[in-house]
Amino acid sequence: MRPDGALQTFIDDVESVVGGTDDEHEITKRVADLLSALLAGDYRLPPEVTRPSNDHHVNYPLYIAPDHGWCLAAVVWNVGQRTPVHGHETWGVAGIHSGSEHEFRYDKPTAADAGRPLKPAGENVWEPGQVTVCCTTDDDVHAVAAVGDVPTVGIHVYGADICAIERRSYDPATGAVTWFVSDWDTPDPGADGQATGRS
Image 1 (cartoon, rainbow, N blue to C red):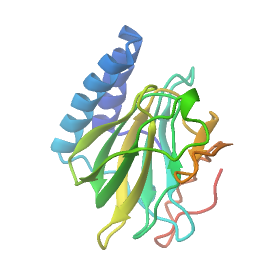
Image 2: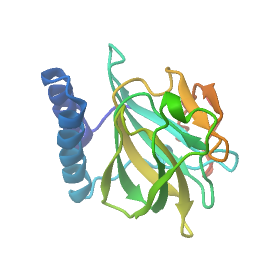
Image 3: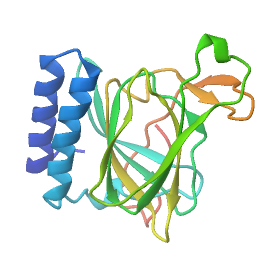
Image 4: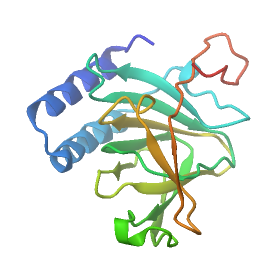
């Protein structure tokens, strides 16, 4: 997807932030402010990157930095879809473009917690226009679900190519960890309302 004017300005501004500091807490604060402003300006994603899949939530790439140091994605959940409990292994900021997202947070396990159930750390329901720092490397475990009667569409910024890095998935009842790599999905401008296959 070729970014339009508003999105290209956002990308340029995030690039400036990421290039100016290695402090992920400062980065996420400033990126959250930029994403809030983008959404407050009633930015609308192209329809092809808001289409859900009946099989799984989808990750549409909006921008991947040439050095893979960060990325921008449209993430779409169909009604009722929920992710496993997972981590990101990097920082991330998420804003709700449309629909509603129910987030379930957990304390990030330490080595001493191995083999123990995860500890819940709160829940939030995020609505259109709201932005959250979804993760930093010290606070990195959650699950999300689409709630309401329309798909949930988020604009996410991550401190890596999120579909090229190994990440943790957790069994919250036992603390067991499995590793996975996500896939990017391919937007299809001619689709009839559903996402096409994964790339």
